[in-house]
Length: 355
Image (cartoon, rainbow, N blue to C red; front, side, top):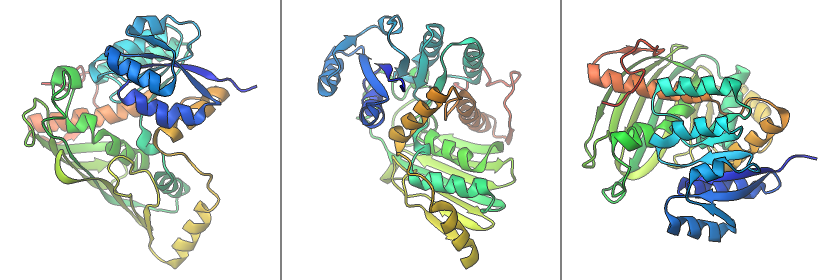
């Protein structure tokens, strides 16, 4: 009989979405058994809404619960590394919101801990899940898309002063970064998910929209390892919120839907080079199984890997790739230089990208 995993969620902000979209639609696979939050009012409100009886304000209590299989970390970014290491040491499986850690050095520390851990770690990158992005990846992996040429990513969102009226947002010490870290990280992960690793970056960052410590506007020129050229732009001052990914290949051009918070959803524009290619694409995708969107899709995929004893569908290697690009962008801006990847231990921003 398939196992039903008991989940403890630490942090009831985005943690509420994990429940609503991810765990509760798969109630045959998961049971949210305990919620934890420092804010007792929010904790009780969310627990009451979803009928979760066990509640705690102390993460240590949740870690010590023998019957909890999965610790889901949804706390502010600066706390992630400590909680991940604690959960792995406690023998738990771990799910953690982005960013996984606060530096590449911390990612490597987590990866070392994974090697001897009983449980497995899955970072959250829910924008990988949806019919649109799944079809694009399937076409690319089949070889039908051909040679990659160029692409654009646009994260044009809006955040006002009210959003930053918060103890941890907008500060290097607690949020760890700005639009790159908290917002555009999703679309940039989708870029590498579909186009592969990054080779070089030149970028500029600025704080133009809100009175905060971290950046809220970025423009980057990216060279992919496969030779494709990509421009990445993001701002928190757009009057219309969109996330848009457009990728041009030899035989097909893909454009995502523009939904700010679910660009992986279908239908994407899939524009073939000619009728023959179009027919081959139609044949390729028509038998694809349905895939859940956002947290629904990622939690379904996670369960399958847990049951099979395989690596999670998103790994700490994926998180490292994401944070390496972010580190390169910050370094390029600070030094006004073209930055080559990988970022090694000798790099000045390996231990921290923060100023």
